[in-house]
View 1: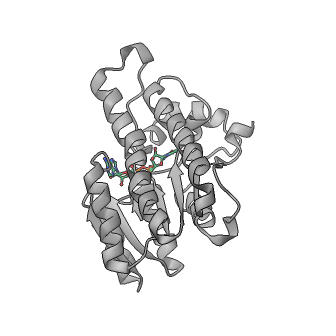
View 2: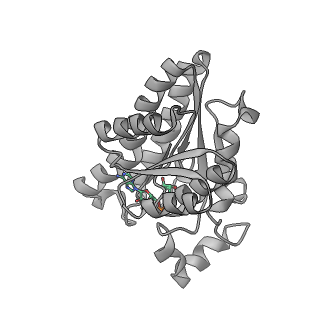
Length: 241
Ligand SMILES: NC(=O)c1ccc[n+]([C@@H]2O[C@H](COP(=O)([O-])OP(=O)(O)OC[C@H]3O[C@@H](n4cnc5c(N)ncnc54)[C@H](O)[C@@H]3O)[C@@H](O)[C@H]2O)c1
């Protein structure tokens, strides 16, 4: 089960899972995610799209039910749907923007974990990967709601890992640095932003979404069987600098 796979990191990861032979259920608020499922099927894989707003707990439960109905099992989940606010100083953030970020980026992940863990407790276990961000570890200016939500994703990941470690459920997070996706396109097309960003970024570039997918596949696999409650930074060395 992958949320937020119409574009970007989620789409690349859905394609990577399918290439490995996994059956993929894609949940997204954007109907273009049906194209991701169609691309997988055209390549000979198995995938379905279920429209879902992750802020709606019942809709998330329908995705878990839909995965089980179509494929008879749910072994791994990538809770990746997210939105990015427009940059603003903290004191100017209005209630609507704050609520949107917290509803999607924080509560959306919480809803997903609740539905997935309830199933894993019955099925015997599974692996969850949540998409945080380097903004879940360090703070960028004018991003306070996003920084708060992504720090919370790291916290929820650890909390769930600690609660369910003995039930064969692993919960980890990834913390990507800057990735070239529709979310960051406007920034990356802005010469002033690029110059400022890449001055301090030791890779001198943004990641391609495919460069994030491998870490998710690893964390969902048996190769990561003793990796739990961890945050995997995938940022080309940005936060190490
Ligand atoms: N692009 C980056 O630089 C970057 C860096 C770190 C973390 N992230 C995180 O990676 C994740 C994926 O982002 P991306 O960069 O691939 O951007 P993206 O905009 O390409 O993908 C976001 C996806 O989430 C979906 N989505 C948004 N709101 C939703 C909702 N309420 N319910 C269901 N689906 C919803 C969108 O339709 C889209 O498919 C996000 O959580 C983002 O915060 C991105």
